[in-house]
Image (cartoon, rainbow, N blue to C red):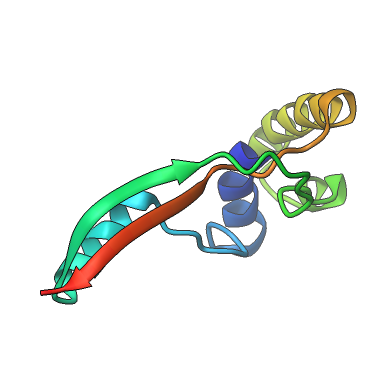
Length: 101
């Protein structure tokens, strides 16, 4: 359901997500702009169950645009079927090692 968060929240609430996570590259850029030097960055697979990706189908049903709502409802149904079959995994965690310049 992670891939659905941005379009659903943008159409339902006018903002892209309820939890604005930075990408690893964006976080590194911000650290460098703040005067730091990124020494290393990587991702870590934590293999933990994770429920933050889930949001109720009713949220998708509340989207006013009927064409977009139908597309996203179909995608939500597919994602929910996968979640029920395989569970929900936490996405990789980004790690950045930086120092002050």
